[in-house]
Image (tube, rainbow, N blue to C red; front, side, top):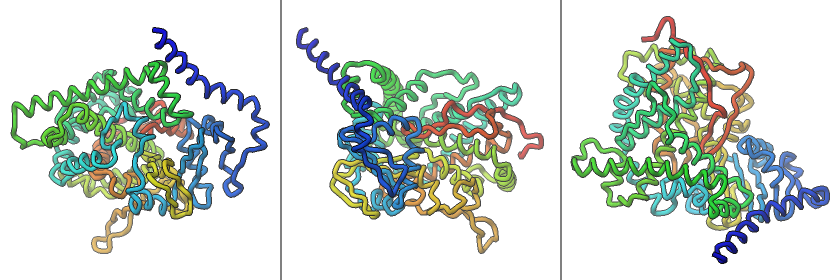
Amino acid sequence: MMMFNLEVSTSLVLCFLPALFLFVLVKFKALLFSSSSSSSKNPKLPRSYPFIGSIFAINANSERNTQWTSEMALASPSQTVVINRPVFRQFVFTANPANVRHILRTHFQNYEKGDFFRVAVGDLLGDGIFNADGEKWKFQRQVASHEFNTKSLRKFIEEVVESELSDRLIPVLSAAAANNTVLDLQDILQRFTFDNVCRISFGYDPAYLSPSLANEKFAQAFEDSVRISSQRLQSFHPLIWKIKRYLNVGSEKDLRIAVNQVRDFAKKVVKEKKEELKENASLSSVDLLSRFLSSGHSEENFVTDIVISFIIAGRDTTSAALVWFFWLVSRHERVETQILSEITDKSESKMYDEVKEMVYTHAALSESMRLYPPVPLDGRQAVDDDILPDRTVVKRGTRVYYHPFAMGRSEEIWGKDWAEFRPERWLKEDPVTGGRQFVAKDVYEYPVFQAGPRICLGKEMAVLQMKSIASGVLRRFKVIPVIESNKEPVFMTYLTSKMKGGLPVRIEERKQGLE
């Protein structure tokens, strides 16, 4: 017992030492200012102090880290900025396409997810594909790649998305329109995409988007797990949250409870799938989870990690992209008119064929993700010392972040009108038909779906799903945000982006209809 008390006392001392040190530094801040340095080349670069780095600026911008680092990167001549974090750590943020290509492709082997990220989000993601390096990552990617063929995409759109639209989303929106109810569109879209990813990836229907819109414990646990895991990445030092985890206090106690609920749900999905495969050995309707369980790698924790990773991929990123899309379209009547015209032109086709041909809607979605990317920041850790193409020196172990949010606001990439929501920048005239043709941007200038060997496997599936939802909703309804017209929602970043407080909307049935 005495040894236990000693351990706890030592842990508490360690926990409060950084705070005590920070307090002393604040008291003598004037003295430290005389020894601080800032770059004359980038006036937005924060002051950096001995040992604690730029902790004052980091803490002051903790609620807008994405916007803050974007502003600094874009103010730099090289579009790269190095931030000194406490205890002699450095983070590099870059919006330079040459650097992005270097990190994600040409020097891919030197930039891994790394221990810093893997440990911070490990309680939630474990060894899932988004948290893995090396052979574990290669295996998961190889197995998952079989699910993203044309046959699977058509099945996903015509069976899963179409039924979820007609049987669940449309009735919910119709009821809201009839009753003049205010809905949180962000919540509705998360429910929709959660059902979708579970059905296509695991052959499991959680029916989360039901008329009652029940407040499921899993959903809140998932939100808490993602939020607290991402907050670990912003900690003064990993030792702080590790001590809190050891003591099981504060946010770490909340995280443990939330992660247990998430993993219990995932384990339930895995257990039911195993039983289903035992009863029916036929692989006529294989899903992603069945492929993993049939691959010889069926250890429970590993497969559970895979399930959680694909929920994040299918639920959070797609819903994040869509909520900003609907908000932007509601503010740009000209764009909405163009989309409606395209929906009318294609309305006689099968849904899969219809959405494949919706080039203007594709352009509007791409433009929305340029300004509000679902994953606004993504990081790697340098395995060895390196020098980026813009001559930024990267020491072994340094975190290097490429910055899709900043790149979407780069005048060098998009021109002086970068701030405009203009889908036409993605289109050109087809010389054969005279119609419009979608023109993709170089992936290292627009890394919204990552790039290189880790480029998103589900990119085409996500785009088709978003086009299907846009078509299905806008054909029947007008979405009207219940916020001040001149007020922009707050862009937040956890592991993926969020709209702070959700997006309250009213739904109006279109009088003429577009059927």
